Amino acid sequence: MTTSATAVPSKKPFLSSLVLLLVPILLLAGVIALFVFTKGAGLNVTPAAPIETLQFERTILRPGEIELHLRNTSPQEIIIAQININDAIWPYTISPSPMIPRLGTAVLHLQYPWVQAEAYELTLFSSNSIPLKTSIPVATTTATASADTLWSFTLIGIYVGIIPVALGMLAAGRQKSGTTRHDVFDVGDGWPLGLSGY
Image 1 (tube, rainbow, N blue to C red):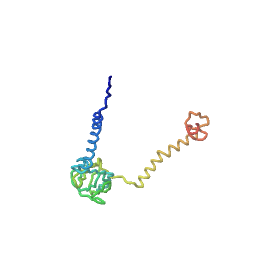
Image 2: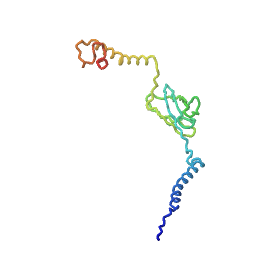
Image 3: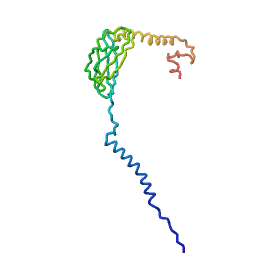
Image 4: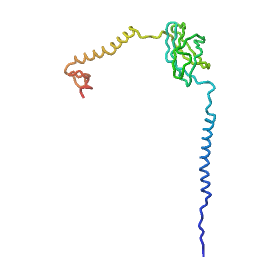
């Protein structure tokens, strides 16, 4: 009489697989908890120097005066403390105030005897001594709109736009009736062949 023994599956491989699955998940949960409860685990460090940026939107030059239009593009407010023009500190006025809020604008006025065609380096210093630089490569009076300027641009528009079109339309109307489809204009209605012939 022979008896056969059937193998009973062991629970050890199942338990070891379960442990191998749970260990990484528990480690990940621990790291996430550490990150949450320590408020970034030391990653929320404020910079040693504040991040301050200023956009110089427009520079206007008038005789004896420089006007700068500024916009604060940094993440916090900026206070303008002083201005340096070609390595010389110069008095200024700023409106509405020296403190420019985030994304706010200000206009800075300088009474400065600038010279035509000279270059100027301007450095604004914030209250944190951060330099904010711009330059004027060639100083010249900023053009403003006037009746003479508008009249000049009107004449240019007439010379470049209206007169050539009028001459082209006159030339098209004078063509003889013996034109072919390869000509530029169709005499019958005055429209270009690309628009009327197809």
